[in-house]
Length: 161
Image (tube, rainbow, N blue to C red; front, side):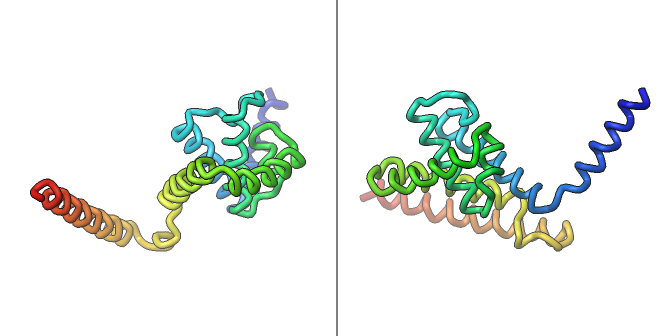
């Protein structure tokens, strides 16, 4: 039993030593994986060479690389090595040049990931009190409601014409 407790304590100390960057990178990776699943219904950790899975992995690699993650770190998160990630980032660039559909899907996915990751840790809200964060959130909600009302009015005008 003593041996188990020592392992738990060591694990807890090691967990406490994670840097903010490592935690942030882990959050981005999780958001990206979930977004890929939601958008494409593809598990990028699955061991397969099917085109749709491989291309979704390429998108994942690019999202992570744009966040300055190392090739090794990205690869480990999906069970690949750094060379596979490097190859995937090169293939990503080629696919973006020749495949409009691939590029549009990536832009949509990137927008989703950016939105989801900014909601979790918003730089504009860090350091503010909860009451200030709530006020900011209510302001954003009000602006969005106004946009919805404007769009409804435009739709009504279009239906009348």
